[in-house]
Structures are given as C-alpha cells and as structure tokens.
Length: 298
Image (cartoon, rainbow, N blue to C red):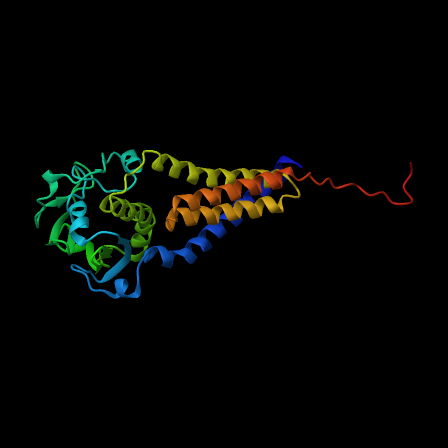
C-alpha cells in the first residue's frame, strides 16, 4: 500500500471518528446537563436563577444536610478546594488543594465573601447563605449586572439521605449560547467529580491516593486504543474492524468523560477495548491476489 493511500485512509478514518464524536456528544449531552436529577430537581426554583439555566445536576448523599453543609461552605481556592481534579486545575496554575477534612477556619462564610478560582481571580461573591439549605454565589460584569449564578441546594430525603443539587445559570446578553456550550464541556468533567467527592466526604468514605492516577490511566487507555486502531486501519486494506473498534473507543471516551460511570465500570470498558484490539490484530492480513487470464502467456 502506498504512502498516499495510507494517508487517505487515515484522513478518511479520522473524519469518521470526528463525526462519531460530534453525534455521540449530541446524544449524551441532555444526560450530562441534568446528570443525576429528577424532573422535580430540574423544575425546582433556586435562589439567584438567571434567565438561562445552563444545567442542573444532583446526587443523593447518605447523610443529613447538616453533615453535608460544612463541606460546601469551605468551597473555593485557598479554602477547602473545589473537590474535583486538583491535578488538572493546577496545570492551569490555579493552586487548588482539596481538603480531606472539615476545616474550622473556613466555616464562617458570610454573604459578600469572595469565591476564588485562583489566588488572583475571584470573579464571584456569596449572595445567598441559608445554613443546611442554600448556598449561592454570583458574578457581575463591569457594569455591575449579574451574569452568572452558581447555586447549591440541600433537600432532605429522609433522616439520613440528602439530595445535593447544583445549578448554573447565565445572563444571555453576557453569555451567548455558543459560549455557554463551550463552557459546559469542561464544567461537566469537573462538576461530576466534585459532586462525587462531596458525597464521599460527607459519607466518611476515605479517598484513595490511587483513584486519580487510575482514572487518568483508564481515560488514556481508551484514547490509546482509539489511536492505535486508527493507525492500523490506515495501514491495512482489510481494516474495517479496526475502524469500528476506533469508533467504539470514541464512544467509550464520551461515556467516561461526561457521564462519570463508576470506576470499576470504566475499567471494564477498557478491558473490553483491549480485548477487541488483541483479537482484531491477531487476525491474518488478507492479501489480494492478482488473477491471470487463461490466455496469458507463461
């Protein structure tokens, strides 16, 4: 196979994968925008709601609201952290360090206090603080108009279970729809992790130092299978199964990135992808033979 042919196959395969990526994201997008919620959660009015509600997400915690609340009031850079992927946030210089315990020195949050993203960037301030019920902060534009609201709600289910609901809403004149869509992608990754971390903290589940490295390995393993299968497809004339495997890897990446399945299930996804790569590459390469006509000379 010539280099030109391999390049064409690679670009064609890459185009198909991009199409799968776009269509796959559009399919799962409604789920991650309301991850973990009920219809009641989504329709609920929350303090500070602006005209455009970007997304509402929720998780059930096996703890009373007063056991969850201390973890929320210490939220923020320079305080209890963001409860998400510290290593990823720190790549951008945010200097985030998520606390693994309740910090008494940060339990006195007040309306008007800043919530910082980095030591030099504090775009929002606390606007609603109703202990064990509502915590909300908002950002203003240069003219003092509200442009963004981030709200937590704690809704008791029974004596030992609480719904933690988080909502972000925006002002359409400041944040056009395209900007909100661009924001929702990294936000989903960080926010789902944060909800899960707060749940573990409130339930007293110790966080393992191996969880974050394993999550990274799992994600890059799926990506590696995708790329290896794509390259092999470009170099094999009988590589349709490799292209299918690469496309399935893209779907797995979307699932583990935006729907936050349990870590054990993510590992299972990877094992299935690796098994598929092994089986496909074990198949012999088909060689196209040149036929000769009966009248050809020997």
